[in-house]
Length: 285
Image 1 (tube, one colour):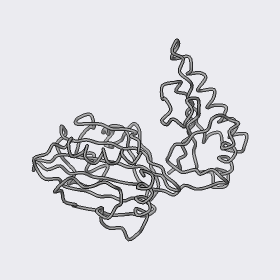
Image 2 (cartoon, rainbow, N blue to C red):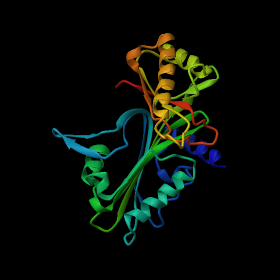
Image 3 (cartoon, one colour):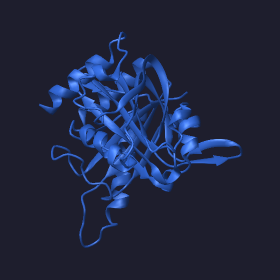
Image 4 (spheres, rainbow, N blue to C red):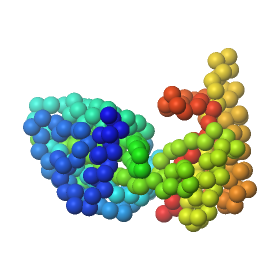
């Protein structure tokens, strides 16, 4: 049932005539008695996806972890009635997003997010989101479904008028199918090892699509309770073996990075093996 709801939501997001967030079959209800202040959709846009605190460096606002993701953006902004905390309002939306099977890549709260005016004016380019630093909440993650995948961003801040403003951004992009395997820019998938048939398909996909695609390989190993750090080298070697195979298949070595996390990141689904190499594709701006 969750997959059915998510597919319906993604399909409607991609319709160019979409104009009101209330039309989204996201199975997310606005906070009770809230009003929709703004909604829009943009096709084929480049989105600044931030998953770490934002800080000011040399008069520029940057995040240690962020990337540019291309896709179709749908944005909605709601204003809740006074008398409710920003945390309470934020959780109202987040709980529904998570019920669709999405994952959280990064979240923060209050001053741990940095300055609210930076999020409002520099990241989201919507000044009305500027609220109190001690009353702001941010969360973001990925979702994936049949034929489509993307990222979601949720930000809530309480302003001086005692009302909370919530932004929900959904960026979707169609997965590109090569043979029997689907690949998408900006989202994770995994291979088991260098001999996995998906490595060959991935090589063909990158060679066919052009040389502006980069690859990040993150190896994982099975936890050894007696020596938790023993798998670090094993996971790195696993990622390097996949990297070597991609290079042997014609992929530019300067576009393939290999890292190892040992057993620090357990499998995110019962169907995913602990020993694996997670793969992320992104396009050079």
